[in-house]
Image 1 (tube, one colour):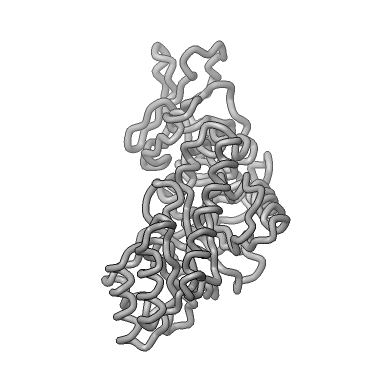
Image 2 (cartoon, one colour; image 1 turned 180 degrees about the horizontal axis):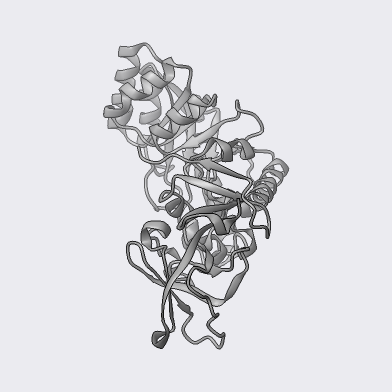
Length: 377
């Protein structure tokens, strides 16, 4: 099939860009001497995972237990569930572990540590736990100097769990305004988690795993001494937010939404397409950056961007395509039925709106495969 034969909107994945992005990250982390535990929350597809993992026994990161269930069903066993654990998930976690998943969980407080320890004792299952460290005030985690860090570690180690180590996520890297700032954040991320690891070890507690993770810091990290693994996910596909951070170029973005022209409002300079926020998501991450990309950058069928053409507005199933304000570019003549590919602001959010990837390579329009993806929790 060709792209022109597909009903729209649908999700298109450029396999050649995916492969280049993965190879680039692998080479960078190999040179730094750390392993990759890819975060598959963006991909949610075993077919994508097979392009990222060197073997199915490689470690992965997930953000939902449904993802853990899905990847276990395809033979992937070394899984980190990287969202703070709660007691209502203990049953599902226990079931996954009984079925062969080497599933580890994370937490960042004493209440959670006591609950997991009680579950471990009751079930006689030494569930592996990583303590989440706050490296930047972005979201969750224990600050490295907090006395609770050692108390949480001791509660886990003495309570029947396996204290696996520490992990952090430099979410503030998404707010950096320069490459130099991202490099500084990568150093801050590393220092925080290594300091936490050393604190636990000084207290006589085990800490074999020291895990960091965000695509910006993974891309620009220059020294990961003391770190054992990196978790990153969106690097596989990239998106406009990453391009705005100078983490990738527009030409690296592997994911797009195929849409069709359904009408025009010529007096307004609008082209109306059949992809609204249900296809693109509501994410407007570039609105905070120097260049606001609206709901996405508009390309031709082969993935080449039209000059200054973006999706400026979106309803549920309608997208409004127009020229960027202030541009001297000309609005392209796109007749009814013409197809466009729209690059997303946030690959995770846009991907979550779809059930499959339609595979193309490079600037071709031939579909080589359709890869299913999962959603939900």
